[in-house]
Length: 247
Ligand SMILES: [Fe+2]
Image (cartoon, rainbow, N blue to C red; front, side):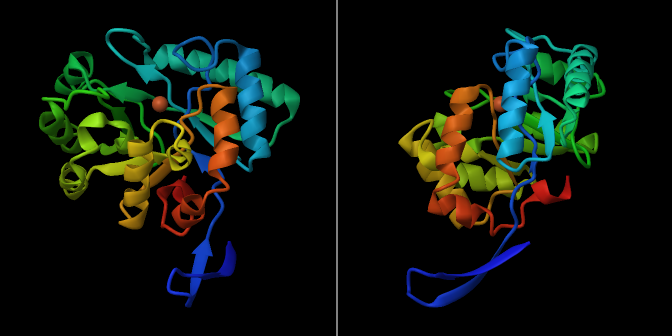
């Protein structure tokens, strides 16, 4: 744990405690099964960059999406093993696991209604995302079903959904329903958009962030992550009690 003194905006010394992030829980670093790494060489490049940034525990979360990526636990597991073997051959000091990022569509709803076992990370955390543009009509039902099956729903990058940009209260409503929130570190440097950056900062200010993720798909994201880490909101993010530290 690192401790340091920092001047607040009121020029008072405030004692801040920060913990560096060693565990990431959102990335697309398994090869050839979504829009992330294409080859095993791509995977190894991204993993090596993440190790250089200080990460020692990585959870790959390939997309599972009815229209585009019909990934199954078996497909994901097979790619995980391949990458783990390559990491072992390199002798790298990193723990790699896999879960998934479920897109909230009928394909996902059917899995929930059938009570199909879903991929989780940590202590039953289930990462899901929604359309970027349209508020999902099945959101309430999905949250109910996830919780009823003892999953802990984690909404990926709430700051990126356009339908939240003018409706912070809606995010609060979801937060108050017990949905955990994960922001993308890259949002803090404006990588996606200015509104996404503003919402991410507001979530940090309101201490409404449970997880921080890289959502790393490519080297472009790595370059942006290096920039995001120099932002004052990244330092502020690290003062929160992030659940990354429990992974
Ligand atoms: Fe993602």
